[in-house]
Length: 453
Image (cartoon, rainbow, N blue to C red):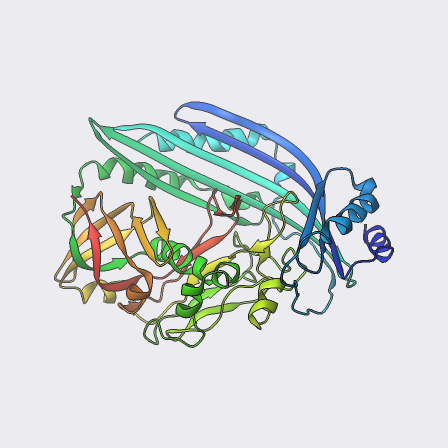
């Protein structure tokens, strides 16, 4: 493949051109209640060429690799059409690398029948708790072989397995409907989804118990959030604001997101790191052939960096970070997060809660939305905190505010970092779902607006 790609690229006349090609073997199972909604295995092959003109890009995706020369010729013609500001790329050293997959159990060697029986066992557990009416279980595994070459001489071949399992129980008592979710996954083999009975039990139990929880009156509270929710907070509320293609197109955000600006105290660090082994957003090279790296978005409370493609790095006079990603060969790479998390601090969960006289403990994530710097998140469940102790179980509330104001109100960061990967992923510009991980430790936020009943 290397000799073929590079020989084709050598024959063209373009300032910059690249080829991406993928071979994917995919398996999917989906249970809804007692019914198997879908089960499938598929194989897909395809690629794309991307050529940079003076003022824009041309992009062509394809399935037949034999016609590569003609695709590049056509892309070169189209690249000359856009008019406007010149497109520049930040320089990177061309890489020639082969990356093998890391795993213990090859999912391709596990029969579809075995996968079905594993998922059906988990699904029965999801339906086992009192008043649980239905369930939703999704299993996916994929073997991905990616090839990348460009006119600068780079050639990268990356193999990986990605596997994920999401489990939801839904309980009902009259008009009161409650759900609880557990998930697991990442870059690795079938071993990641084995022996997950305990998580299925936890989901079923929580959904059932939430029927007896109390709705929370709205107001301002000191809020302790768990690692799952702090990870969503880091990703959704701040991570997207750190994607450079979003930043440089928005004058207001450019002014707000100045490198060196203080957003929180010195205990606050937010990081994006695709080099962590085994997580959902882990990779060694992005879809522009740039080596991945750990990037501090916030360091000791100050804005320290942002996420870049080669193009955005050149536009902003900064360095590429290896965050140009595409969900498949059908799309060009854009700036995306990988494994985004709040770094651990020094306090234990128990210490953080014990220092709260009157507040709430919010756990899990049910949904939410962001609009520039404003956010609203709905936790899955929570507890009232009275005099440093967890008391009444609560439900049906949300957390809302301005992300930049809230960052300054974080006054405690836990020592218990946990990262999470599930069956979904991140969505942006029509590219979804992209595998990522989110995470963090327990954190405490003062005077957070909480909506309730």
